[in-house]
Image: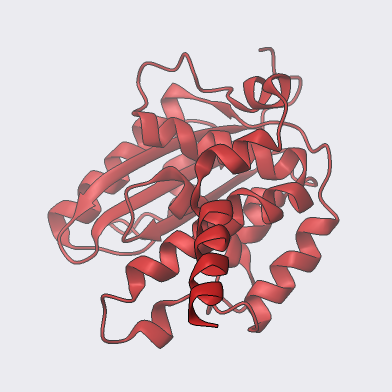
Length: 229
């Protein structure tokens, strides 16, 4: 019985932990279409990946949940076993955030893609650098400005939003944690990624070091009508 269990566990691990398996569920054309940031030289690989994975979830939320999100859950829970408060850190497939995300993503199909923007990325960089310098962990700047003030400097009178995540350097980790939005009552981060009413279509992304959480990820959104790509 033990050998059967180990064999089944190995198959389960290979299926969920192999990124190639998730990728195989998407066509090359779909993966290329989601990779809108591939030529954005001002972004790092993992910053580009944030845009890539946000676009995949907008393309087909249910498929993303069954592929890349499951890869994330398996990998994340294995890594979190190293910590004493594992029960608090793990992704619980029975809790309301996981089940709610599964329901929400079933409704997502064919939303417009996000495109990288250098001005928004500069602003996101500045906020990430400031959070690192002053050990901040929120939307407010040291000088009292909020996200609307900072993003609106570059795109005034537009629809704007900001997501912040802490603790992870990888694009997939950041996107999945923001989608899960565990402990966030209004699910604001999830709503920003899945939004289809504000016309959000350009994003700036910055992953920076952080003195308390090791890393921060800042994602700034804006809506530009009649965007020319």
